[in-house]
Image (tube, rainbow, N blue to C red; front, side):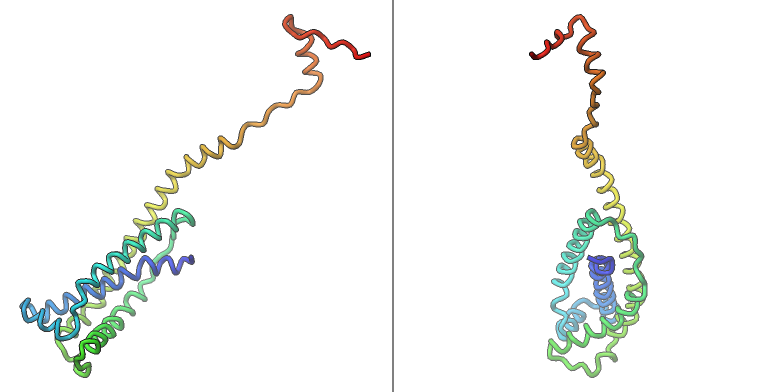
Length: 196
């Protein structure tokens, strides 16, 4: 798996979380009363958001787990996250989300950009995108630290197995030394009789 795909698997769920968080805060700012906000969300096709957060957390946990395994096998990423995809993707993805929600709910999309909740959410996309970029960088550094620590703790164990497989070379005794050892000691075996 390439470095770019590994970064994407780790950063994309965090970027989507920022888009959803700005979305939720924008609706909360535009409609502070909970009952009216719930009616507005239901009318505009936002009934899925509670499940979206759970799915997003699961994807983030899965991406982090995959990155830890890949980092252990291939080494840590040691890469920096580019800021521009976070900042450029957020407003466009948010507007696509708002239009898609209204289309699925059967509501009209013509006046979507005139709604205060949509405008508030759109205004929050860049600050939230910057915050999620910082958060993704922190998650990346934490994963690199965990990978480095797990690789360091696994290295002594691997070294032990490697040392056990590599025995020190045995000394080969030259024939003169063998004759010397065989014939000089009191406890040495008797010299061999010549074969007739």
